[in-house]
Length: 466
Image (spheres, rainbow, N blue to C red):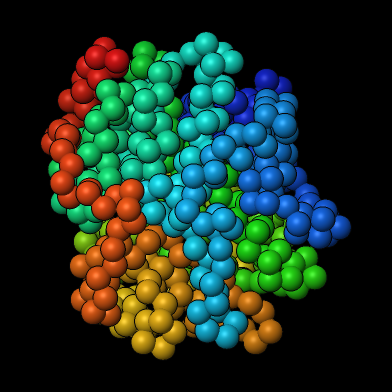
C-alpha cells in the first residue's frame, strides 16, 4: 500500500506505511491517505466474526501496512497491545435501550478511546525505528485524552522523545494528572496558554518548519497521523459484525471534535462495511454540526464545556473527507484549506456538501442538555455515561431508525469526569485500582506561552536531556 497527500499528486516514489507513520504530516502540509481503499468481501466479513479482537484488528489493518509490516508481525503487535485491557472483549457492546448500543472504548490503561489506537502505535513506532535504527521526537497536541494515551504508550521507549501540549486549565483534573504524573525522562508535558486549537496550530507550525522538523526528526501521534485512523477502524468492524453485518446494516453515532474517530467509521464504510448513517455529536463548539446542517464551516472562539475533549473549532481530519468528496483533487483541496486558514471560513462546494449529507447527520448539545442526557440515561437505563459519551448516545437516540442497530461510541470512562457525572446523576464514579492514587502522585509540567520559538527551544532541550 502506498500513500499520498491530500494536497499533492501521487508520485512514483510514494511512501509506504512505515514512512508515513514516522512522518505524520505530509511535507506539503496535507494529510496522508491510502492510494486506494482496500475492499472487504461479505464472505470475508462473515469469516472474521469468530476472531478475537487483536486478530481482527490485524486483519483489518493488514492492507494498510502491506509492503511495510508483514501480517504475522502485525498480529503479534496487536495481541501485545490489547493484552492489558481490562475487558476480555477489549471493546464490548452494551445495549442501553432497544436498538441503541454503547461501544465501550475506554477499557484501556488511560480510560479513553485513544488507547485503542495508541497502545498499538507505540509498538509500531518501536518496530519501525528499530528496523531503521532511528530515533524520533513525537510532538502532539491534546484536548485531554490523546496526550495521556500517547504518554502511556510511549513512556520509557529509548527511541522516542515525547512532547505533549495541552491547553492550560482546559482539561479535567484527571485528564491533566494522567499526563503530568508520568515522570519518565523521555516525556515532556507543556501547558500552553491558549485553547486546543492554539496547541494544534503550534504542532502544525513545527511540522511546517522543515529545517526544525528534520533537525529533531519530528513525528506525530495526533490523528493527523494516518496510523491512528487505521488503528481505529477495527472496532467499528467488530461492533457491526456483532450486530449482524454484513447481512444487516448498522449506524454509528460518534461524539467528535477533531473528526478522526468518525472518519475511521467512514473508512470502514469505504472498505465495505454496511454502514447506513454516521451521526456526529457536538458540544457548544459545534462547527461540525453547523456544517452538516447548513454548510457553515466557519471558525468561532473555542468555549470551555463539560466535554473538553471536543472543545475544538478546527477539525483537522475533516480535510481527509473533503479530499474524497472533491474526487481526490489535491489542488482544489489545498486551495480550500488555504482559504479556510486565511479567512476562518471553508467554502465547501455544494455538490461535495450534498454528498457528505448522504451519509452524515449532526446534532449539538450544550452543557445543560448534556447534563440532562447523562441523568436520563442513568435513570432510565442505569447506564453511567461521561459527558462525551452522553452526547454520542443522545445523537444515536435522535437518529435511530427502526430495524437498524445504532451504536454510539462510548469514548471515555465516567471516572475521567467525576464532577460532571456526579452533578448530573448523584453518582461518584471511582477510578479503577491502577489509578486510585492518581491525586497523590507528583506532577511535572512546564507552562509556556504560545510563542512557537520558545516551544521549539523546549523541544530541543528535551532531546538533549534524552
